[in-house]
Length: 300
Image (cartoon, rainbow, N blue to C red):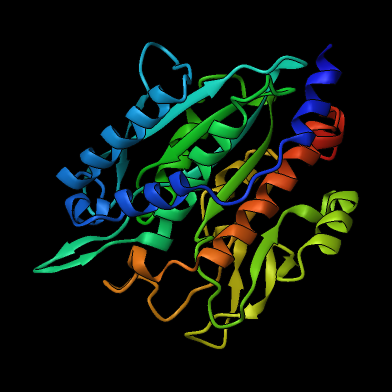
């Protein structure tokens, strides 16, 4: 029966939903004040994410969706991750962690750094995946992790890995989503971590001409310098990798509005977002068909 669940999952076809775009708009609204860690806007973002988790029927660990943690920047600060899960049917004790950071840069004077692409787009895609995976019972269990304090140094994902709600040995993969709403100057969506899965790469290459596969470090060059872009340190998949957990990271490259007040929901590119969401969903469908040994068998 569980194998049949997987087959049904593969038959579910989607385009970008109105809810996906609305979630981006809500998370990057002026009311959220740029979602800076520790701010009132970040609290509003957590309330929004928690309500969406609840509406999707996601379960919580220890009676709540919040994971509070301390981290040291210039001074000790508090961050709050938002995590929920959906139990799988075929491999219920094996977890895929879908992550996306909800924090951004906040507000300076009257200027709000809205963070629509960075990273309301990734959080909205996380919620979209949670909705799609609620239509049938998935093979794997899924943890949906909206991290805080990513912009300050990946502290939310570091805190999750240091204090996970399930044993790290039961986490077979991290699927991280960051900046998937705009094409950037090169018109590409980038995927790192996929080289351990050549069959997945072959399928994605055939279906998505704007998807480019990258190693941990390598091209393209940073648009602001002549240095190679370090994709391993670019987002929340880094701490999972350092803990020996395989990852797949979907993300765009820096664009002209990156980390500026011009990163607004009106500048999200629906066609590019649709392509990114389809590539991510195709990947999840492929993952659902693989045994745990395929996903985590090459841990180093």
